[in-house]
Length: 114
Length: 114
Image (cartoon, rainbow over all chains, first blue to last red; front, side, top):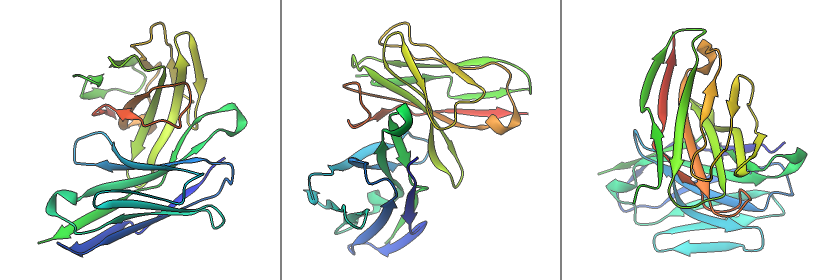
């Protein structure tokens, strides 16, 4: 099956600086890579996603890059703000063995220091 | 605009008891899924459904049953609860019949098995 590794587990940055979270995946057949933000006591919320036919996607302060050859993808947040503090999860879609679902990384706790 | 609604929000059970976690969505989504979230483990897929009358196993299905009698509802049943099933359970839905669409998550059910 698919295996997704996410680093770092905790990331602390100064307000206004950039934050980068990296993920690697194992299954070269994976073709969909979403990023979710989870606030305390809430369910994950999709913030951006990318498909395997695209190398980069941006949405205001958030961008995701995908390197299919190296099987890694990254989340970039620029001009960080206090409300960006949360746990972020990367995921990859797998569809092998008859199952179809998302495999999630273990999460990154992003802390924005004022 | 309710989205995905999960009930109950909290539950404490004794080992061996049974219960059903409810999940309902009002977006007419075909794909629905259940994940469990454990500390340091990310989210793991338990079961999923691509439409009424169709269910399939995910990564960690043992100890759980599901059914999909309507498009809106996707209950998760624990037949004989075990302490290892202490977790936070999230239900999600998305349009289409594949997992490569944005998933909409509920706010979770926090389950403790004593």
